[in-house]
Image (cartoon, rainbow, N blue to C red):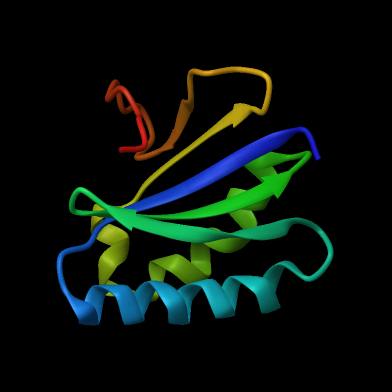
Length: 103
């Protein structure tokens, strides 16, 4: 797969961590074989879920309804990059000029 899609949320508590794990499990079911969830990480007040895909925009549109069911959706930043690139392109929120990074 050519791209890494990252779903990033603020996370400061055990409840946030548990919510991310539950979401990750739901996304694995929703995606089936169309993309691969490559785990998550936590640090510096944020949590990331990593998705490997050849179609980051389509995959994000596919999983966005599942994420939108959760309160954490209002703080979601989603971005992708080619594995060979260093800079991410922000997909969500639409029109964001925020520079995306993983800390």
